[in-house]
Structure formats: C-alpha cells, structure tokens
View (cartoon, rainbow, N blue to C red):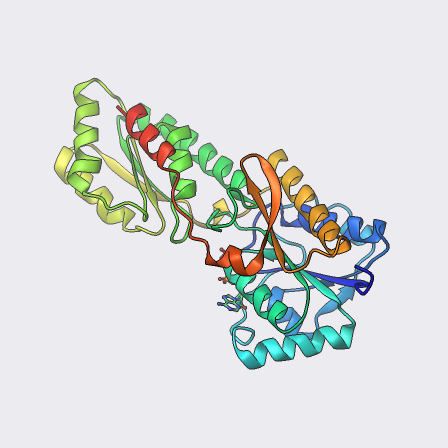
Length: 323
Ligand code: ATP
C-alpha cells in the first residue's frame, strides 16, 4: 500500500516464547521493503504513553532465541475504553504511524479491531501460549509451552514411578484446555480434566486410577487445566479414595518462559514476514491464521466472531490410550 510508510509493532497480553522472532521478522521484512518501523514498548499501555522508538536491523539482533518479549507487554485498562482508543489514535498520528502490527491474544485482537474501526490499518499475529484464539489452529508460544510441560511431566514421572505415586499436574491455558489435552497425550496421562468438558471426579479420575492399579500400573498422572483449578483438593480426594500417595504440582509461570522451540521460531518468523507483506499488498485489518497446514489471513471482525472448540479427536484418542 503506497500510503503506508511507517509501521508500528507491539506485543500485548501474556508474553509467549517466539514473540521476539515475530518482532524480528516484522522489523527486518519491513526494512527490506523500505518501510520505517517503530517499536512500541509495553503494548497498548506504551502506545498511550508514547513509549515508541525507531527500530533498525540491529535493534532486533540477538533476540530470536530469547523467551518473553523484548518489547515487553502490559495489560492496559485505559486502552479498553472509548477515550483510551481515541487517545491511542491521536498518539499514532503524533508519531506518523500509518499501520499497526499487533502480536498477542484475542484481547489484543479486540484492541486492534477497535483501532481499525477508527481508521488505522491493522494486522494481528496470534501470540499466546494458550492457543485459545478461534481463528487459528496454532498460536506463537503454544509449542514451546507444551514442550516445557512435557519436560516437567517426564521428571515427575521418574519420581512417581519410584514411589508408586499419583501425580496431579495443573497446567496453564486460562479458560482453554489445549495445553492440557496435548500434554495428556504426550505424557500418557490416566485422566485429563478440561474446562470445555463436564466431568465427574469418580468416573473420570478415580475409576481409571483404580482400573490401572488392578492392571499393575506403578504410577499415575492426572492433568488438570488451569480453568478447572483445584489441583490440591483433587489430590486430597484421590488419596482418600484410592489410598495411593498423591502429590500436586502447579507448574505456573515456568510454562510461559524459556527459549522458543524451532517450530515456534519458524512459525513466528513466517507470520511476522507475512504481516508486512499483507500491508504491502493492501490487505488491511486481517489476522494471520494457521489452518489445515497452511498460513492464511482472515478479516479481523470475522475472526473475532469465531468460537474455539477443543479437538474432539484428540480428546477421544486420550480416552483410548489411557486404558
Ligand atoms: P493472552 O491470551 O496471552 O492473555 P490477550 O491478548 O488475550 O493475551 P488480554 O489481557 O485479554 O490478553 O488483552 C491484552 C490487552 O488488550 C488488554 O490489556 C487491553 O488493553 C486490550 N483489550 C483486551 N480486551 C479488549 C477489548 N474487549 N476491547 C479492546 N481492547 C481490549
């Protein structure tokens, strides 16, 4: 698009490994195509404060391997108001920002949509470990987070086996169970409890553990999604009902950090470059989406109307493999 000369880029919402690779790709692809690229620190909060600086090829050097986001991120309550969005638009005019690339979750996409409705062209790049954005099957950081949890499961399994224990593991995902379901499969869990599925503790946790013990199992793993919570209470209940020594582990923020996997780095790089190319081709107010093995783009208003569901095939597979 000829009328776009300066592109702003920000990361917003929860940080996710791979966000740095996406920013790097935006900056380098932007400069390659002759754009002026400005970095905005601390998401919409930084936009409102004018915390904005010129990015060069070197300003994104040595960040591709780092977790978190070097631009930093924040949750802004002021931006979430009509007056906040107006103020943000006036700041973009002060800095001469003609288009904005927003890397974040669906809350961040809602913010980007609000900017687009005021006339600022935007592109959204899905970045959250939770993979809870309806318009895409993959979000930046999801792969690294799953691998971090899997690493923890393997360590917990060693000790659980040695003591013939049951381990209850609470994993992140906010109101979504995508991390929980995937690591239940990769970790060989006896049970997985997801916010998207109703559950009965005796039927879905106690019974599979007792059945497993009768077949000679030496350890047990129960994965609980953050949106269900209550890992400590569930742990006590399992111990009371089965007599098996049971321990809870709530992994917490360890799941958000760490060096991004190759997959996250490559996908983030592709998405960052694609965001710039969309602007160059005059495609505005789109969000990048990974569907059926390919990168594509969707209108931001349409994307935000979509509803995310859990992968039913994976859910059924886990039931079969947990036998
Ligand atoms: P994650 O899934 O990792 O938490 P997210 O982008 O969904 O990421 P949020 O905290 O929901 O994280 O949103 C980030 C920021 O986007 C908020 O602080 C706010 O400034 C803006 N935002 C969130 N929801 C809206 C909304 N409905 N309308 C406008 N702006 C919003």
